[in-house]
Length: 383
Ligand SMILES: Cc1cc2nc3c(=O)[nH]c(=O)nc-3n(C[C@H](O)[C@H](O)[C@H](O)COP(=O)(O)OP(=O)(O)OC[C@H]3O[C@@H](n4cnc5c(N)ncnc54)[C@H](O)[C@@H]3O)c2cc1C
Image (cartoon, rainbow, N blue to C red):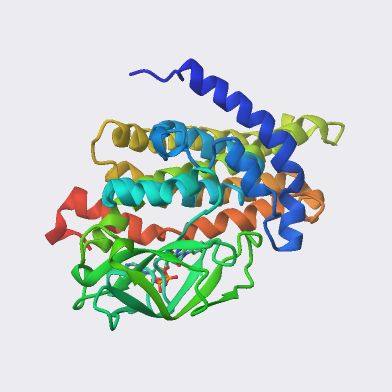
């Protein structure tokens, strides 16, 4: 078993660390207060290769493996958790396209993902369903010309929904259940689409939104995979993105713990640094230990993906564990700061708000545990 990074991974990480410190961290709080991603963020990230990680080189991307994508997500999230949504959606959609799109479709869509011109949204959740995604209601009705569809219905809770010009939209083209769902790469600049921003507790800059489709047209050439295969495609993608999300959460939690440890070395109480009290040091050590273990789980999932094996079990284990662990670790870090942790001058409170969002986004802990239970217990004996 080899835990070392390749020299090019080390070099890329060092570059990303310096980029994160200079270009991301200084804006993390300001973007939250403004409630928007600053306009130069996506082009800046694209120049660092962060939108094209999973895009093949022939389409202008990095063609990075899944482990390298996870390393990048973990590092970026340390500096600006919300910027990492740009990386996450670009990578997830790239993988959906690699799994389900034709080469001609990839050539049409992937260069602009790599260049950052279009960071695609993933449009699955609806007001009436989230976890029970196979029962989505948004309709794709056949268009009059017989060569396309009209999308009718509402998606909600869509990350980057206020900004993105394109999205992978899951819609019902057939009967009930998963086999009636198809996936489309849709133009979201269509004037039959309207958007409403959501007023969120955290990740306020990512423009989570409700999208109303009032007959947005998609053609046959916009369908990803065959009719009725959309749901299967996204579920495969989620198994991979769940490990990347785990690393995003562990990245922000590690940064919070590092800050808390630095504070514990400096802050004095009763005439000594607070780090010399076991009650301060040991909880930080316990979280550092668990974060290290959870990272291994995430990277195991990504290494399996790179080896062409099924990452579902460790990826879904990572999805229920890592965001919860990260939220608890950031909470502990906040308490280490005492009264200073409660001030919005300290970004630790924002980190806590932000990381909780990914206990829900991309599937809750219960749904991830359901997937694992089906693998470990067998479908007929799982909940
Ligand atoms: C920050 C953030 C970003 C998001 N980004 C996107 C995005 O880009 N695109 C997108 O499509 N969606 C996105 N979502 C939506 C997210 O995927 C859904 O919120 C999530 O899948 C849960 O669906 P729901 O909110 O409808 O909850 P529900 O499905 O209504 O569930 C409510 C509660 O019941 C529990 N529950 C439901 N069914 C079961 C069961 N069978 N067993 C046990 N417990 C169960 C759930 O775990 C949850 O605690 C995002 C959400 C957040 C918070």
